[in-house]
Length: 123
Image 1 (cartoon, rainbow, N blue to C red):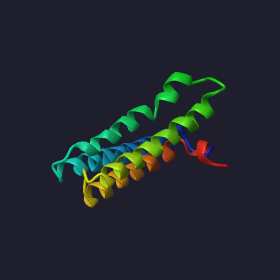
Image 2: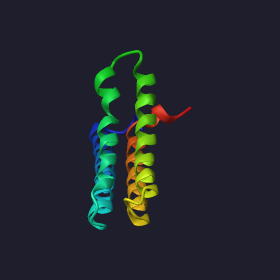
Image 3: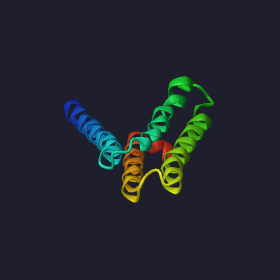
Image 4: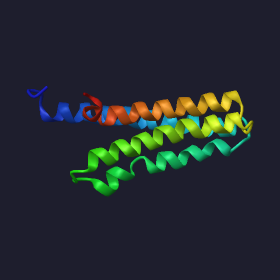
């Protein structure tokens, strides 16, 4: 890939950016559909976790402790994004359809994050 001209590389990177935008948009649409289709807006609580997810990157960018806080933020967001709909389902506040849409929204957004930072997730 190093021998490709600059304009070709820019095109490939813009395609990756468009793919990430489509993934995030799809996750947001699934999130809204989980609420709108069942006329119950309680599943929107998981948006709090999506807002908290980039906070370690914003606060600790360029720091040595970024990786530990990044792992903590991703872990907390993952647990919260799965636990909130599960708790709401267990309490009888939402149905199975809303739970499935919420979890699929979480999966799509996690795939977008993993595509954005692939080196962070390789061991």
